[in-house]
Amino acid sequence: MRRRDLLGAGGLAAAGGLLAGRAHGSQPRKLITVAIYGGWDVSLALDPKLGVAGFDGPELDEDPEDPDDREDLATFAGIPLAVNPVKRPSVTAFFEQWASHAVVVNGVSMAAISHQSSVRRMLTGSGTGDLPDLGAVLGAELSGLGAVGYVDLANQSQLAGLVDPGQPSWAASAARLGERDQMRTLIEPGYDPVAPEGHAPYP
Image (tube, rainbow, N blue to C red; front, side, top):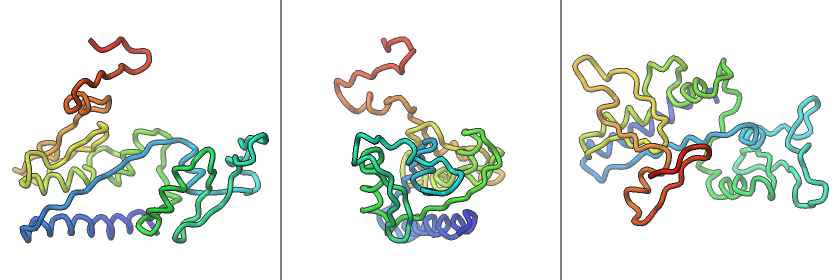
């Protein structure tokens, strides 16, 4: 499946379902977008190439002293994955529960090696930075249902562009709460945040 087709079908279906709730006055539904960052582990697990000639896969890092540290190919609801009970137990646990609701799209060309521009392209469909992400679009459309239509807990939202001439920007209905436990500091009594390594302690 091509990513454009996936977004066209899945994205519009999700948006339609959320907007339909508003139109019919029913309990509004919510969209949660999770962007999980990672390096080779993510690619090697979700696009397995175990035993492929000329490809140095995760099997090269198996611990010969640990019989459980072994790479294996498993299929969950038709989705092939490279699993390892020692190094990636959460991958197996997640797909055992959610594979029937999941879609894995491999082979998306980013035309870049920059992490930030590639993340932007995955979230918005464009690497230029002039388009909002799906959460921003829905947040703007549904902002009348609450004080804020879109809450970003990781400081990665893409809010560029305007809805229409004369309409508010995507950012007008969005709130960024930071990525260093700022929200937890506000809502959990007694929580003492720890500064990132290499930074001065918080006052």
